Length: 320
Image (tube, rainbow, N blue to C red; front, top):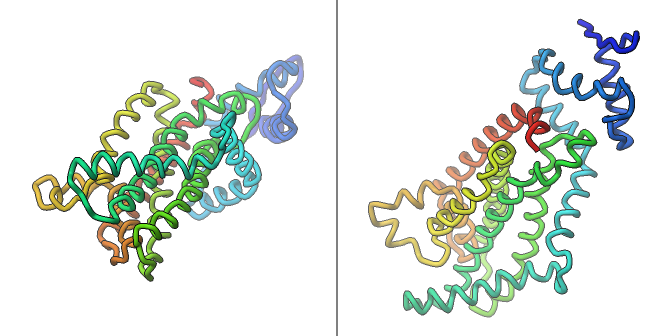
């Protein structure tokens, strides 16, 4: 059913406005505010009349549309990732080298403090700390960046149309690239401290996939909440501190697992992912229960995050 906007005697179909006028202006990066009377109506047409259109798609069509949209904007996604990496290390003399130095220096400090505090003389204890710290740092950085991603790109959102989910996705991706680079530091540290390579190291990519999925799912949820509730940024920083202490980064979990508080670790998907990574690093079979739980939790989180984000994304323009 055609809907019309009448302005100065002109009758313009809604479909024609969206496809011919709005998308053309978007394609060439021209702001659609203040161009002319028709252009000034575009915000009303696109944001107010769009909910009137009831489109029923099955799951297959929805996934196909999602993949097609992703492929169409893959180059923009790449540029957003590059931009994130450049902004993170701008005005830094060492630049991306900090992705190697930071975890190494943190490992040394934590080893001195907690190795002395707990009287731990295990030769591979620094590697144990480093593995946990690397995965936690990525999760923390990725979710923080995703939380602020929509508001950080508010100027672009107001001027041009791109799928808004690209912003939290690019935030997680550029932190993931930095995380993968930082993993290089494990090679010399493991070699010096006597960690021998085994076939169990083939489990490590599983943990890398799990931590990405978990970070993306949580990031999508946080990105949605962060637009409407700006205090979430501060609350999440406190929550991350709590998560850090429940991931057994700088202590062995054996005592806690034998106590009545074992659920703190067993139902923490980030700890389960770290445990899978450590199992591969130290030549042990991974805990299949932990891997399965982390995978299911991550996929459910992604589904919830994408649903909430898609449902609320048209309201973002009113709050950013």
